[in-house]
Image (cartoon, rainbow, N blue to C red; front, side, top):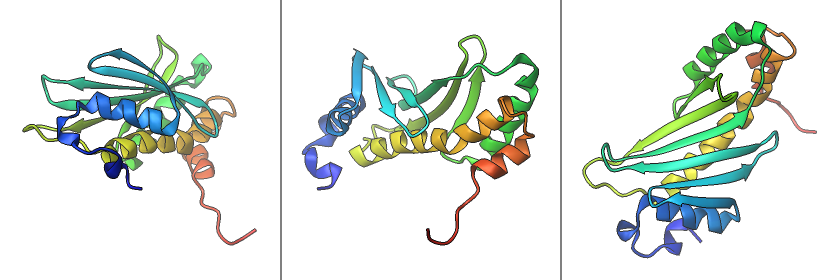
Length: 167
């Protein structure tokens, strides 16, 4: 069953209501922080990711941030920033940034719904899936850069290398 079939009148639902329904559908742990904000935990292969979605009436944008903790050694910060630049050049659906004060790696994305547009459950589900997939894809590269002291280019090449053939 398509996610849309689960919701009858999506145009009557607030985007955060849709997110809450998706979290229930996927059995994700979540907390409705406010009418316009929800936080959840999504388990990945490498980490459990903290995801927050918030709706902004001002610019009609559904904002997503997906975070995970990182504590890179101070002497590897420049290499981390170089890796993030390379990663962001390859990422079209969102961007990564490092919040040093919070010791958090952040993936962010905004879905603009100007002109009273309505997000579909599939769009929101794709936003969340893309955030987790992007974090999962680049997590090993970030670890290689910060802890194995690999160059950003080498770490990204190792981490996102495709496997070919069959086992």
